Amino acid sequence: MPDKRVGVYSIIINAIRVLLLLGLYVGFQNNRKLVMIMSIAGLIVTFLPFLLKSTFNIESPVFIEVIIIAAVYGSLFLIEVRGLFAGVWWWDMLLNIVAGAALGLIGLSIMYALYRGRIISANPFVMSFFALCFAVTVGVLWEAFEFALDTWAGFILQKAGNDTIGDLLSTLFGALVVSLFGYNYLKEGRSGIFSSFLVRLVGGHRKFLGSENLLERSSEDIGNSIKKGESDRLEFKSSLRTNLHTNETDKNIEKAVLKTMVAFLNSNGGTLLVGVSDSGDVVGLERDKFKDNDSLKLHLTNLIRRHIGSHFMQFIDFELFSVEDKHVLRIDCHRSDKRVFLKFYGDEEFYVRHGPSSVKLTGDGLIDYIAHRFR
Image (cartoon, rainbow, N blue to C red; front, side, top):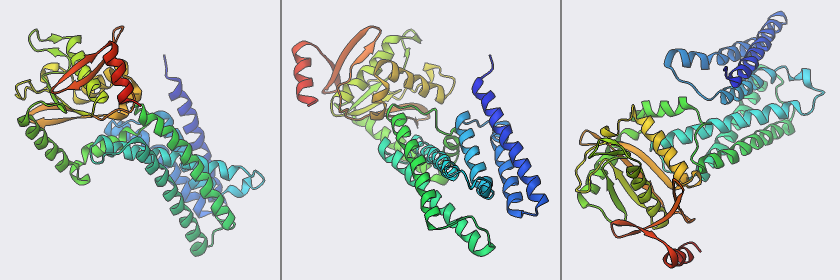
């Protein structure tokens, strides 16, 4: 069955292209060069997603493309002919709100890309606040660009100081709404709204962005941690889902990984290294037979959401590293401010760390621990 979202996207994008072509024609007839230039620029932008998909096989969520392209159209083209809408007081405000929302999405995507690439370490609030600041900053730069065109080229893009302030407040509102929405998305560990293009860009340019050395240092840190052995803040697991004795997928192996994560969350946090045996030998994750690294990460994400809860994703970071030419999954679990239960096929279990092992609490021990730990 055809994707209705793609159908709506096609209608919107083609409608924008028709209006831009009309604007190009009107600009040519009336010798309005700025309208012509901006119409051409807008048309080029509407084809960028198609070019990225066909040339580099890079695809971003449909509704983000619609919002961004609509904002570009509104900012680059309608802003020049908004005299046609002088009687509609809310028109310019609406365009700037949409532009602020689009810029907020771009800011969130940049922060998520840097976070996923382990270039930065930030919580959902900081990432959302950056998206807000990013959108407002670009909005200020755009107003400065309009001012420059009015001053040097004789255009009349800004009517007065109140118009500039109104534009910035509208941009701020749109960015604030998206930032709040993005905060909830990040807190729940979801990533569907973010631009896959920016995420891949970070992954493909680690050296330029400075994360290549970070990953190398992290691999060295993992090696040093393995030498120290397991402790109350560090544990090893040989695989994520495969029983190495039978060489078959085993739900109990997945449960063992999740059990340790829950114990770390309920205690003082800790690190789980998957792909390392109890004796400290690096066995790698190849026997888990994932088709690629993204599939492994998606599988772990789904396990966490299903058996621990999406709202605890904010306390969990994980990444693959190369150690002794093998892949090791590092899972960092931070101390949770809420009690965490492992929900595994009908059972709910509560674990904490006791020395180098995870201990299940029940009865009075569970009640007392929760009463003292989660006040």
